[in-house]
Amino acid sequence: MSDSRNLLRTQQFPAVLLLLAAGLGILFANLPTHDPIATVLDFHIAIPGTGIDLSIAHWISDGLLAVFFFVVAMELQYELTRGDLSSFRKALQPAIAAAGGVVVPIIIYLLIAGGGDTASGWPIPTATDIAFALGVLAVFGKGLPTAVRVFLLALAILDDIIGIIFIAVLFAHDLNWIYLVLAVIGVVVFGFLSRMLPVKRSGIIIAAMIVIGVLVWALVLLSGIHATIAGVMLGLAIAQSPSMRARHALDPWVNGGILPIFAFAAAFVVIPAVSPSELSPAFFGIAIALPVGKIIGITAFGWVAMRIGAKEKAPALTIMDLVAAGALGGIGFTVSLLLSNLAFADDAEIRAQAILGVLVGSLIALVFSGIIVSSRAAWHRRVAAASS
Image 1: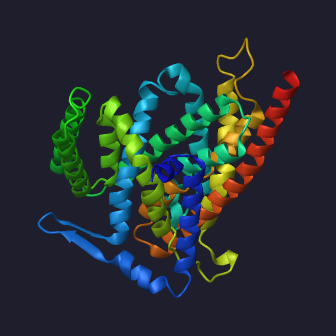
Image 2: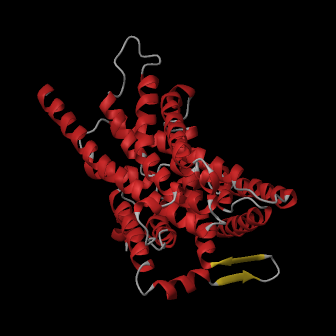
């Protein structure tokens, strides 16, 4: 059991598992298995007396995925306080590159699909999937300088922050301030209790935190903000020491269960029986903006960022290292799939094609990044061997 959990804490295996789950989702959606699985995903489960009534698909995207965002937010908290983003100087360069990795994909998407019903999909190609990007880096990047991994991690984390802001601001509906205020109070209590744990590891306190966390999730859901934001709020509020223990305990469950289940459900779309010319502009906008927009935006803005304050020394990364980071940034996947579901919640046909665009664009970026990262790693190994 411990070996399997350790495997799920690695960077390579969860990325493979995620890709496999998405592939199975597409496969089963286009086989005779479609109808029975669709019936299960559409089945509603309600909590009596609460007003919460969600389909299985929404329990996955609104409920299980909140746990994923809880883990992401704990990592964000660490990086912002003690890690690679803990100072303005450390955060400046990846922040500029991340801005390019958001702005350029948006521009490309709007140029292709900015008119009519598809215009609302512009946030979709802005995300970077940390698990996938670091997985590719771990598989193909042996020999790359530590600076590349640090830069990519900071870049992906900043991308996540932007994605979280998009989810919270753009996709809130019929905001109920009473529920939201109660949720914030719950988060404060949750954070206070977490700060008692380093002094006294009490099962009662942990149980109370779990109950409050579930309550905060329900209140955020009922407030009109997407429920995954509850995970973000709780992850940022928890104290550092219990945060590290919680991440260690939850990582195998998130990597081995929650993300593959979400990937399967999100990728469970019927491939339209149409010619390429009949595909929605949203498909092409996303499929192009993810791999192309990310690599152009991150490389160009990163090149500028690396020259800020670097007058007396060489930049930490070369232009080709930035190209590698940009290629990895094009793997949108998890957050992009969620944004596809939110952006086109009222149009099933465009939503399905947007999801296909995410999968195609991410796959292109995955292949291209694997090639360029392995090439850069080999170059760095040769340079290291020659200088030793």
